[in-house]
Length: 571
Image (cartoon, rainbow, N blue to C red; front, top):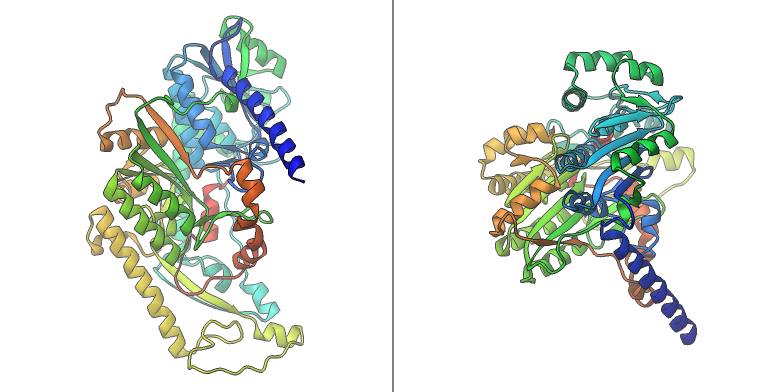
């Protein structure tokens, strides 16, 4: 058996070495007999970082990530051998904030003298293509397949309410919250939005819509009023999209390739964007660490649930990384990239403590992605600087908790009976067999109020605001990054580039000095998986995590309401 493992490791090492050599050759950016054109196909989900559990070479086959795309786009700007970028958009499986980051990167490429051309087979096929088209407008020219459609339809959001189903099932929701706008419990307790929740959601949709209209209008050189009319008149067949100046040409893929060759000035050497890459000068004296804080916040270890594909941000896992970086003299600053709807209040507090300790040793700049709300905002509150995209969902400073009481379901539908015994007046406070008594409800409300006040205090100290000022913008209200900046919940609008500029400045690194980017958490090595796989916390606990995800939380949940979280992708 040992011989088999050794042979397997040798073969893998040879394969990895060969692949590495090929990647190194391809990443040089210099054409071997012709100009280099990078090719980016958007045909799969784009995460902030590919999952770090599982076979280390498998994730890149099915997922793209900001961790690989951003360094590649950044490096291409400064590479004289790269003439341009051909973007094939087959879908846009990410949120509006990520689209804004990508649009900014494409604009930076164009400013660096590279051509950027886009090919759309269709912008939505029987579906909403607004986000795909919004991204495409960052290109110099948009080419649409002659038989394609342009479904520039605007925004659509739908929320599911379970109260009617619970009544039929004889399940009794027992939830409460702190914060007028903290509407997560309404999915269980209501049949439609409360006026406060509807107000908050409409404000987000209004902000998103105006950002989309403004971005498309500027890119296509159209008046905003005309863009609104175009949205209202959609969808369009390809010829009409061309006539209305929404695209620049109708072309088949071979005709688009001819166009790319013409722009390149000769038959180009095509390199996948994911295979190009670059994380700064590997010999640079200064390193900026980019730490991804992704997913629902839980205590312990995080990872991706293989059954549901839900991503979990573990307080222990992240704390270990932040602690190591605090002690690493080679790391000059840290950019904490947050894409999280929140989760456990306790886990959020444990992470914030480690962020605070790290910030005592070196600059910490938060870069917010699609969502950084509730617990996701909690862990960001004490960074030196916070940068958000205009469409980032953030804030949601509020708390909710409760339980689903299933006794009637079990007894009347399933024939299951219970004969309970207890010692202690509140031993049954969290049981799903009975609602809270008046005294228990008061205790639960007190616990939630304590978490809420703690949250307010952290934000006040981190953002240098008074508790009264924070309370005025809290109440569980979710804001777009655009509004959050006005309210001083974030410092600036921008993406990775701006966060890195601020990190440089805070660390005293000259603007032109070379730096290396180090991304965390690092993927497990093959050796780790072979020898230590049995210790992977995700493997034995997958079922436990799934059941935990299905069970509503008790007191003290800091999580973005699901109907609002879905607004990150309201298309």
